[in-house]
Image (cartoon, rainbow, N blue to C red; front, side, top):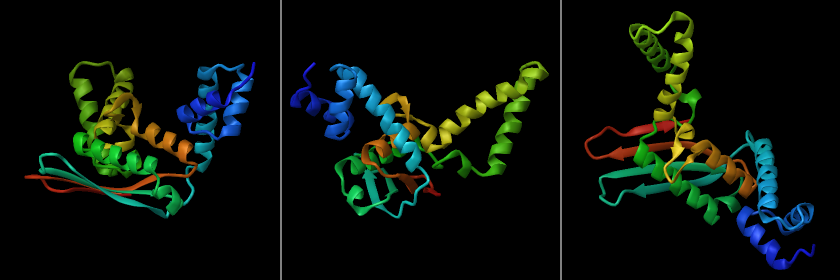
Amino acid sequence: MVITAQMVKELRELTGAGPLDCKKALEQFEGSMDKAADFLREKGLAKAAKKIGRATNEGIVHAYIHHNNRLGVLLELNCETDFVAKTDLFRALANDLALQIANLGARYVKREDVPEALVEAERDLQRRRALEEGKPENVVERIVDGRMSKFYEDLVLVEQPFIKDDSVTIGALITQAIADLGENITVRRFARFAIGEGAEVEEA
C-alpha cells in the first residue's frame, strides 16, 4: 500500500510523533490509521516512562483565576528545558492542572506527600467503620484499602480523574504530555486560594 504525505500528516496530528516514525508505523500496519496511532502512543508512553525521574529545573508559574474572581490557583509546573516550557502544549497542560485544582481542591501532588499521621488516622477511621458495619475480620483490610483509594483520590492531584475526561487520571495526563513533549514534567507545588477559606499550599 502507498503511504501518502497526507496520511503521514494526519497521523502526526493524532499522535505528535515524528514524520519518519509515522511513515514506518503506517507501513507496518498497512495504512491502518487506528493501529498505527495506538502503536505510536504505546511507544511514546514507553519512552516517557524512561524520562520520569530526570531533573526538571525549568518550567513556568501559571495563574488561574475563576470567572467570579473568588477562586484562584498558582501552580509551578517544571520540565527539563526552557524550549518545552514555552510550548503551547506545556502551557495548556499547566492551565488544565490549575483548572483541576480549582474545581476539585487537591491538597497534595502525589500520594507520598500526604502526612503519615493523616493517612494512619484515616485508616483507623475506616477500619473502625468497617468493623461497626459488621464486616468479617478477614476482609476488613481489603475494604479499608478500597476506601483509602477514594481518600487519596480526593486529596492527591495525580490520582484524580481529569475533569475534562474522567476516563483519564491526572497522572496519566502528565505521562502523555511527557510522551508528546519528550521531556520529564513534574508538578513542583501549587496553592489554591478561595474567598473565605485558608490558602491550601502544596510543595513537593
